[in-house]
Length: 418
Image 1 (cartoon, rainbow, N blue to C red):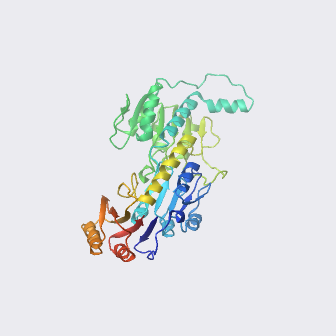
Image 2 (cartoon, rainbow, N blue to C red):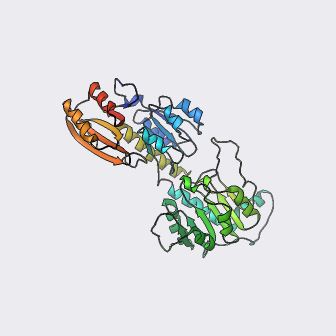
Image 3 (cartoon, rainbow, N blue to C red):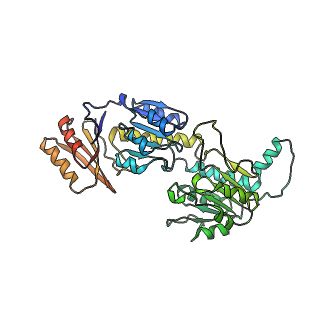
């Protein structure tokens, strides 16, 4: 059971039972995630597609836990309409679709799945690189059109070619290892200092990578600085007849410039799984500058959409949401200080998100002491401007004590868990 309040909420009069916890899961989140949350007794509503801001504002009323993927955007306006919301689960790698500053300010925990679909994205990249090198997409299209075009022209092996990876994080580094096993020479560029795996070589500039690579693949995150990362200037620096892939963020690539370089023949083929603007629901119309081009593979943001990955993500993020709701655990939270204090069924727990000011813990403990509340266990962690403290007490804390804690000027959000 839990009770939650912020400094602006009406004072709650009773603990919230598990059966009263409302969960909204959007964008075809795997059924295992929903079932895991239902197993705790939560009320779980699932929807197939993403929601617009106005639709989400209507749907989020009374919701405590929200699950999304990459197409639903969590804005400050949405958060203002969701006073009961305590946590958001991004059932994907990225969290750029969530206003993290606004969630942090409100003490709303955000969780994601930074590793669960890495292998799926890597396998898609390898498959598309080979398909582009062999021009399989074009040959398959010809066959479906009744044309027998048995020719080696323009078809190449990947062995001995140079693969350039822009962004050497979880996906880029794993791709590096597998590509090398296929016979690629691997070079990479990253703005952070990353340890090279295997025989991969680090490039000091992105220009160096572009000028030496037969295949260039992007694996960057959605930070604002990556918008427009790859445009006409970068494409012009690529080797003639090289290949290009983007399985990371749609905002990173100027698709109009890419079309021009494909039509001119400078770039021999491309594969894109992400786009600057993507449809929100299954069956919606898809528009792109790249439609209809030869040797261009377009996929609907399915890099991590294997059954194995989605099942793993569903279970992983759902478990994080459940642990936070029931025990206050912020392990692997994107935005809140991390605490994972072991639970004790015989104790009652206070979870307090506060502004990171000196003396807050002493104030909290002094207040509890004044009311003869015995502290059994306690853990505090800070992160930037926020602090988070879990306090286990011997008995349920009375409403007067909770009201005083909630009224502290440093308090952002207070929950009593039982």
